[in-house]
Length: 198
Image (cartoon, rainbow, N blue to C red; front, side, top):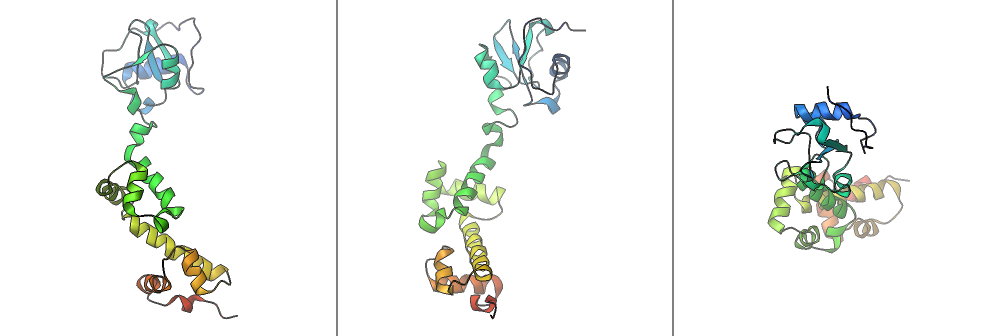
């Protein structure tokens, strides 16, 4: 059985040294991203799933984050790439970009700007933006924005006394005609048919 080092460790709160060491030696995928192991002899830190031959247990320290390992003077392993561990921005990858895009669309970004400008804001090209949205959201950014506008307009019709023209512009439509066309396409009814009689 491995001896626990005498110096203080910066372990995640729910893990102890022996659990981390067993997970590292077994290359347990369930622990990937939960902790990082620093090897004192090489000054390199790794993920628990690193394919390199495991270091001797007495030469290993454990850290809750990659930043903690780097602060302790370790550099990242080039084989297991700690920057791509589960939970990291690289691991979350394109889903993070789509989530940022969805937030911008929900804030009305496409009501005042183009899809190309959305792509520039997200730091990608327009074609790649379309591919990512189709893969992660199942619809294009403009389709998502159109659905958001119709849903917002429907909510305003149900909950306010605003005129339909005011609702059209408040929901982000460029004109009353587009507002009417969107309702006809979505509900097969004009927006006025949703107004409750008082």
